[in-house]
Amino acid sequence: MAARVTRRIPIKYRFNEKIDRLGICIVLNFNFYAPTRIVFGKETQHEAGALLKPIAGKVLLHYGGGSVKKSGLYEQIAASLKKSGVAFAELGGVKPNPRLALVKEGIALCRHENVDLILAVGGGSVIDSAKAIAMGVFHDGDVWDIYEQRLPVKKALPVATVLTIPAAGSEMSGASVVTNEEKQMKLGYAADPLRPVLSVVNPELFSTLPKNQIANGVADMMSHIFERYFTNTTAVELTDELCEATLRVIMKNALIVVNDPSNYQAWCEIGFGGTIAHNDLLGVGRAQDWACHGMEHELSAIYDVPHGAGLAVLTPNWMEYVYNENPPMFAQFAVNVMGTRGSYREMDSVIREGIARLREFFRKMGLPATLSELGIGDSKLELMAKKATKVEYGIEERPLGGLRKLKWQDVLEIYKMAE
Image (cartoon, rainbow, N blue to C red):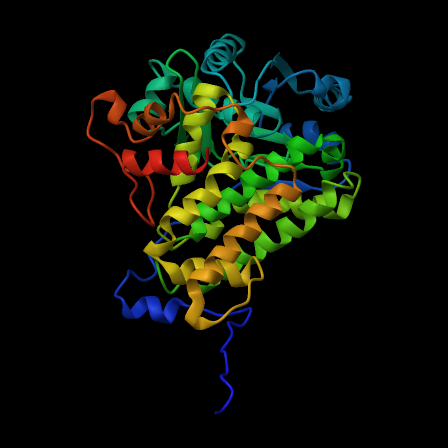
């Protein structure tokens, strides 16, 4: 008897031809707009004042906790602004999962000080807070209504950033996420007027980040790619390749910086990777998902957990729950990103191996794998599932996701899988 030959999936296998024959939608029309000027490299924070002088006479300097001042960055930015003749008011105190109360304080301060621009010095939380303030200044009413009622935003104060934590990609996106502590709700909003006009990115500033912040940031930027990558849209080979390449580069360099935070070259790759992950380039022409973000926002809103850590817990469980909706897409991820090899006839095992490798990568980064590691028990899982899909608010259910629509019972199952 002749020996059986097992056909194996090559590293660059493409499944889209098979999906096309199933009649799933082809590439979508898109409108890509990304006007942010990125000033990248060593010592660039000292250029902030000169860069802002042509567009702002007075700014609100917005930042987080004590690290900006302890590191000396606050003094560097202030000196740069003063040298260039840019006046500034200031508002610190932004926390992770930025709070609505501080946003409202910032809106009042901007109006009182008559500022021309908001300069956010920090990571995604500070930048998201700045964007919320920027659109609230011109809104006649409660800024939370914009998030909750999806009101249109046609005008906002310009925002600029000096990035200190690569993670959220907010330095080049039009998105903002804010937490309403009173309602225990965390909501996102996106509009083109919120895209920063300028972002200064010096990877040297990342070298003092603690390992948990590095890991959380990497999980966040990877999730931004996953939410765009896993799609039923076909004929999107270029953005498939861009997503896969960006993921591979981020993962490779993440393992370097988590063990050697002083590695400037690796930080350059991570820093720009996080920006590209969320400036919408990787999602053009594709139906996107965003179920994991919707599920994680409930964890952050109620338990105030780090966003990236919550995503690291939920994402592999979401993959296991939905991959049968489009097995070729997940096999493609397993092969092209996670380096899995296997037979065409054993696609299920290829996919599961890819998910297992993602879990192992998160473990190597020091990220949690279960909700219990985040201090989350089972008492509020159903509540969070119903909040995520809006059932809890007595309105028509809004299922999460694009690859597969998840009702509240589906979300609850994923939470349970993650326990």
